[in-house]
Image (cartoon, rainbow, N blue to C red; front, side, top):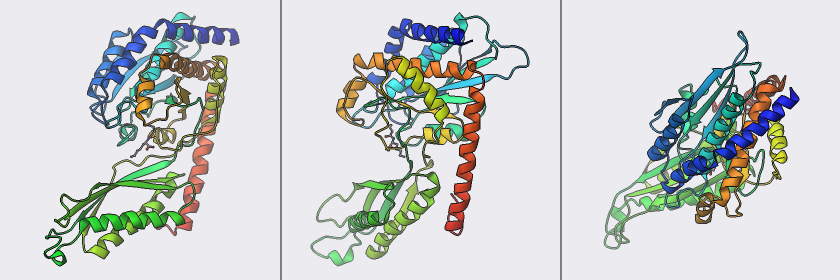
Length: 420
Ligand SMILES: NCCCC[C@H](NC(=O)CCN)C(=O)O
């Protein structure tokens, strides 16, 4: 079996290399037309067309969300009565305002598609295998803003998957980097205009409220846990110096190491926003985003297999970096999975114009394909190595039990003030 598995892994690599031109065209087409969260119509169409043109995939466009899709192959092979092993690969393809694909989501889509195509080709090339296998590619929009994976989770898109894989471009290769929970909020203050010089006492100053809110949050930071973050911007602060602003708007991201602490940080931030309204006489409206993102729940069994496969392909791994957030965190609490990071040939930092250039550069292709190979090889370990899938699931169950205990102890601490 070990020789067969090794042969299949080699087949994955050669299949992905043979497909390199069409995979490059796929990623490049997405990179050239950057689209924002939930507006990724061209990227959706490009990926749907790609899988439609590949033989054997059942493709569902606009899958539960306008710009999400699902492509499935199988179940194929295996003996009757054996349970299907269902592996999923996730594609992200949303860009950032003004700076395009500065987080390389075009390469997330390309690597996810490449891994799925490579795995299918390897399985189709070899002899029959013991268990029926199903491969699903899920196009998951709006990671940077909104959280398409959370919407898809709510709609049941992940229900029958055994494991999920994706990978994210950054400065180095890592099997895991800390990704924290986050919830964003839009804060709107409404006051009353007046001539700022002639009769300022008639006005109710919404910009004052925004400035006070910003200052309240700034002092709150001294009392936050070191791994928590609150950061934001003033999006609107007035139109003319001699018109007392009757409207101001702020947007904030609230981050905690565990999603179980989000109610706590939300309450602290809300007090800061409401105090500013009270002090200025403004009305305040708090609009929390529909989806909160969870921290990533690790699966070290999968991480170790991915690292072993990556090292076999020449990857060097680090454990330093990141601490942003991703809606993959929510997925990892529902299905065992990994969200490794990969080097793309540049030291540029994500969310910069330099990274936009790097994610569209030819040099990124070799690293993107290498990552796809490691993802597909890890999927082969799950399918063919006896006991691996059971170990992955056992670790996941134990992590969920630990989380349940944490949740109960926090509720006791908070006196059940805030249900997470
Ligand atoms: N609702 C706010 C989500 C912010 C998600 C964003 N994610 C990343 O930067 C990961 C790389 N795409 C963040 O952490 O700010």
